[in-house]
Image (cartoon, rainbow, N blue to C red; front, side, top):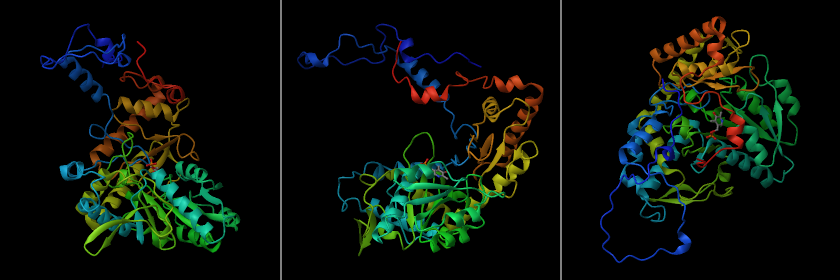
Amino acid sequence: MNLTPEPLAYELSRPGRMGTVLPACDVPETALPKNLLRAELSLPELDELTVVRHFTRLSQKNFAIDTQYYPLGSCTMKYNPKANEQAAFHPGWRNAHPLAGDAHNQGALELMYRLQDSLAATGGFSAVSLQPAAGAHGELAGVLMIREYHRSRGQPQRRTMLIPDSAHGTNPATCAMAGLDVVTIPSDAEGGVDMDALRAACDDTVAGIMITNPSTLGLFERNMEAIAKLVHDAGGLVYGDGANMNAIAGIVLPVELGVDVMHYNLHKTFSTPHGGGGPGVGMVGAAPVLAPFLPGPVVVKKGDAYAFEMPAKSIGRLKSFYGNFGVLVRAYAYVRMMGADGMRRMAENAVLNANYLKHRVEKTYKVKYPRRCMHEFVAMGDVAEGIRTLDIAKRLIDYGFHPPTIYFPLIVPEAMMIEPTETESKETLDAFAEALERIAAEARTEPDLLHDAPHNTPVGRLDEVAAARCPILCYRG
Ligand SMILES: *Cc1c(COP(=O)(O)O)cnc(C)c1O
């Protein structure tokens, strides 16, 4: 157990030490322009082996799905097959140049076209756009589409978005970004949308509802069709947040539940990892009423050739060139590998794993809404006097597990949102449940073990606000 923080490359530096030997100069030497030279440029001086060890050690401090279990609620940190990585790194894709022209990139366009088709079928949508680069970006696209729809019908006063309080945090944020007014709809005792509150909020200022289904409570909205009908009857449209498609793909078509527009996170469900700040795709699917408003261009087929085309009333471009193309290749490889049956098994296993884990965890921890869950569930960390969810989360790191999402959703006090994902074995789920059980026992007998956790990381509890607001981004040795 090494508790000393890793030295910085600068601190390992020794004057004159080098990792490279430059060949003898075989051209005449000329002075560099003065304005490009700095007298004091403190770069670390290191030999190659020290550099290799330094960066390899740093890389091992990362917490990764390839090393440990990562049940981070709502983020779907599942295992993504390496074969799909390999596909994305094929030189034909990797080296394709966006300015080569559509005639030379027919293969890339064909892949996008086929992917559009498969993903549209997964949701029952008539058209999709692969443009948005993230889930929240897809939400923004959808909300702008709804706004344009109302404007095009001469109803610009429809500016209210109804958002259940069990929605993902990005939902109200994107509505606000699109200049709409957010009205929060409370949940009922069962964790579903309070239908009376919804009915009361449906007036002629309603642009639509934005609903996360399954919700952040991990619950399927049982009244989804009735909710869609209420909103449609009031002249509004339904935005479905489909970031967690791994709970329902192959089982239910969102369009049949009344959803008019929805994003899916290819960087959750479709084989690109979520989190870590990498590129993503928050593809949007639309029912016929909204399809003409999709962001573009989208790929169409004309005779034997593929081409980009703007949908008729498009809200415009959201991403340059082909978007995050590598993510599209992974998604296409994944969809082809899984097929329709595989997609359904993915969802069934996500739900089965979550219910299995919930069944074990709820013997020790409270679960606010104990009915059958979808791909995740929300437990509560207040297992003993003076113990908070933060303490449980930090102690899990000592046991080698990534903590679940904590303090979200906001409507559950001391929330621990646990998403086991479909790719984990029963052994891993059992080991995680055992760790939670042992931590609950420690909470009663040795609470300081929890208060002082984590014990084996270079840094323990961070001031997260200061880290976000006042980051130190360069060396101040
Ligand atoms: C992850 C997630 C989002 C946002 O996706 P990003 O790609 O992180 O922007 C939106 N809604 C739900 C329900 C999610 O789980």
